[in-house]
Each structure stands twice: as C-alpha cells, then as structure tokens.
Amino acid sequence: QVQLIESGGGLVQAGGSLRLSCAASSRSFSMYAMGWFRQAPGKEREFVAAISMDGSSTTYADSVKGRFTVSRDNAKNTVELHMNSLKPDDTAVYYCAAKSGSYYSNIRSPVQYNYWGQGTQVTVSS
Image 1: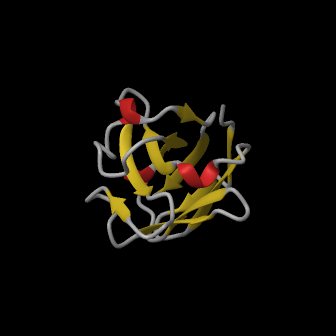
Image 2 (image 1 turned 60 degrees about the vertical axis):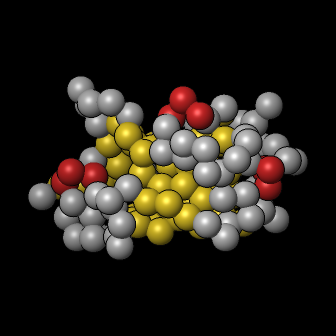
C-alpha cells in the first residue's frame, strides 16, 4: 500500500511558477514509476508528466513540455513537479500517482497507476 500526499498548489498569475510536491509513505517508493495528472472541471483526467523508478527517464505531455519539470528524491520518498510559465489553461486539480511494473508500459494512461493522492488545486489567473 502506498499513500501519496500532494502539496504546493495555489493561486498564481499567468507567467508565474509553482512547485508541487508529493510525499509517499511506502518504503518501496523507488520501485514505482511516478506520474502527475490533472483534471479541470468538466474534463477528463489527463497526463502531465512521469518519471521512472530511478529518475533516469522522464515523459511529458506536449502541452507542458519545456515549461514543467518532474523530479524525484528516492531517499526522501518525494516527487516534485516544477511548473513555469503557467497559463490559465493549466488550471486544474493536480494528482500524483504511483505505477508498478514497466515504466514504458502505457505510462500516459491513468488506468496503469495503482495509487493516487488526493489532489491539489492549481489556479492560474489571466
């Protein structure tokens, strides 16, 4: 069982930055690929970014590539999402999630993830 707790959301103006953090309870944190997803009102949950178990591989949605950076610290059981040049379209609830198995197996699909956090709200004003 893995418990995930996100933090760092808030209100920011367009062009600003935020850093989201996700803390995991599991001692086997390094055995999970980690992903970030977001869900805006009335929309489906969408993939944002993912990072492999050892942090050597990352994947990004086209909409955030070049603006967002995902990183992890296995010693601290944390994964972070650094968001720069934020746009109003980035407004959503952001979730971190843990995925067992191969990193390269449908890393963008939410159904591949085993554990989810409760989400943190990010609001970008224009």
